[in-house]
Length: 130
Image (cartoon, rainbow, N blue to C red; front, side):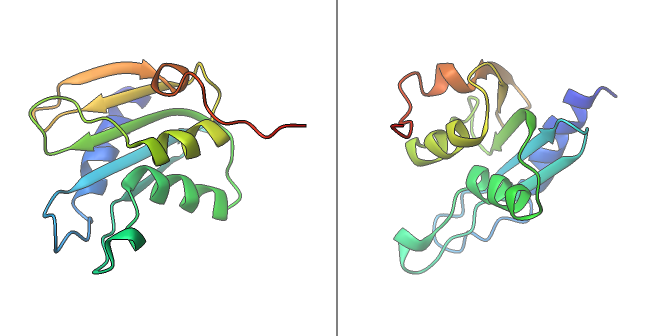
């Protein structure tokens, strides 16, 4: 099994831990770090919907809080007919920590995969003005 195969499977497994009592829509994400580690995350809902957190942001915040900030690839899995795509907020957070050319794998419930990149997902990301 390749590192990318393991990454895709990790995203699917992460979805199983989703806390989704309101939408019942499980999403999992997994980052492959430069050191080869896989860090997963799931979506976590809250009764105050604005306080919910997407799987992609959960995974990246988990990695960064553990001192990991060098990423090689991202996989996002959803129980959808077509490969799932991250929301705008997640795209901006991903762009903050990941290179524009980093591969992103969008995955459907039948493991149909669409490969894209951070830059393709958010071509005009907000950058700090220096």
